Amino acid sequence: MHLQMRTITAIILSGFAMALLTSFVTTEEREEKPRKCIMMFGAHADDVDENAGGTFAKYIAMGYEGIYVCAINNLDGCNLERTPWYDKGPNFTVSSSPHKYRVDALETSQIREEEARAAAAVYPSTPIFLNYKEPTFFIGRKMVYYGTPEYAAYNPPGRPLIPIATYMDDEVEYVTALLEKYKPEIVITHTMGGEKMDHGNTGYMAYLAFKNAMNKGIPVGKLWMCVNGWLLDEPAQKNKTGMPYVQVDVRNHLKTKYEAINKHISQNGALGRDYVMGNKTQPKEVIEEFITVLDNTKK
Image 1 (cartoon, one colour):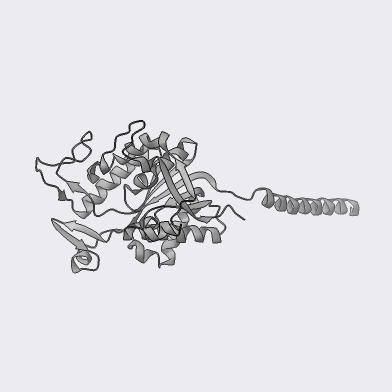
Image 2 (spheres, rainbow, N blue to C red):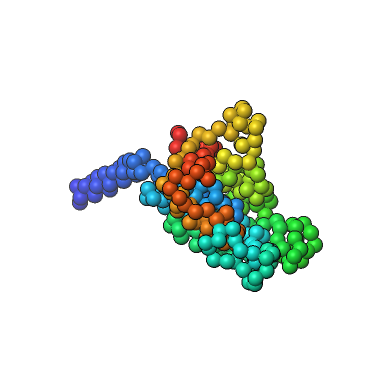
């Protein structure tokens, strides 16, 4: 009886010790790393494609999962009438008027989301819409601004404006949850303090969420920002603040980038770019440039 009890006790202790050792080894050996995933944060529906569509296409072609994030719900920026600049695409028109007219807020949001989904499918990638409000929209022919009685009365749907959301912990957590879900190796976004308020604040939100993810131990990789906005200004160029750390040759992926861009018909074809091998008209787009703002791969 005593022998049996000692044997059982020895087995239990042995098993406990083994479980403890296995747990320790597992933690060491299974330290989670970023996934083979590239996530693009664009403020508006066409910003992913404009900013870094070639890089996005290149990494997806290499086997990365692509996550196409539109931060703002695009209440503004949709044009009815007038043949788009991209004359090989469908005419976004309701009549034969030679003029262009703005579309009201809710229809704009729906149209631009459909165009973003079509663009995301080109790469192919998964579209995500964060649904932050835009600060302007049209009612008929009139521009309405955030903070006016008309804006409050219309009360457009969506999350807070991006600059307000960056002050709110629960909104930063909302974007952090997206990083936790996909654990991207590469995140690309706008430059903080970029050329437009929506762009710069989208970059800042991505920065806050990425930093938050790092602090929580979420396995994210690198945060890149596009070389635009103030980084292109003369002082930044002179003191080399705006010098890119990352240069990606995308000449073999411009066809995909332009196909995606031209899905944004309400943006007048988004510039209506055609892909021609050796095309000299868009030399800056052959190499897409970024700065590394955060690097979680360096321990």
